[in-house]
Length: 296
Image (cartoon, rainbow, N blue to C red; front, top):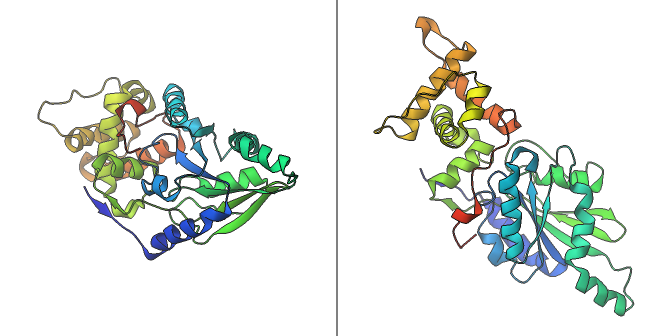
């Protein structure tokens, strides 16, 4: 699977980021704690080189706790500050201002020594579409300032958001990967809703997710869909074939039947994706830092 997109507004975003970097003191990158590698645009490192970085592991409430700790350690080892949040409930967002000031402690001390104690700190906020960036900004600001919607590509222009007397955020449009040649990255983005559902076939996507959960989180899958046991994976089966049988088993338990007693696997796939994205199935992380590429 290879997904390619790079709408004009994405290229415009890159130019805007480059132009605005001189106006900010630090960069805050929002990533999805369930897929910290796949939800990072690889261009961000080169675009923002030299700027202090705060990585926000958002949706941490839906991610595996132990793996989130491992990811936090991974980013800290690379000299980046880390904040774990759930932007929908607001958990962790109250610590943002303190995290920024800690990250910029040396710069703030330099300002103070120069008598510039009232100087406003400005932070650029970056993130791929639908990673929860606008919701995060609204929680940090304590009011609805950034447009938030549960679909990719809503924020289309930059806007300055005052947080308190000494802190302002620069909200930016989501910046996606120019090309996805890595199938796992594409699937992970699709599982979490960062990619529009129309791009991929829902049933195929559901099959891949079912196969993954059966391999990595079998107990959660059994419990959620009341399956007495999971089908054994046949040696010659790929993820789609194996996942299809799992979709059928779960759909039958849910009573999603159509004429002839067949299972409505499309409906089951949609339910699976909805329940995965909402956290109803449990806390899952699809990537671990010890398996990551050095380019991350």
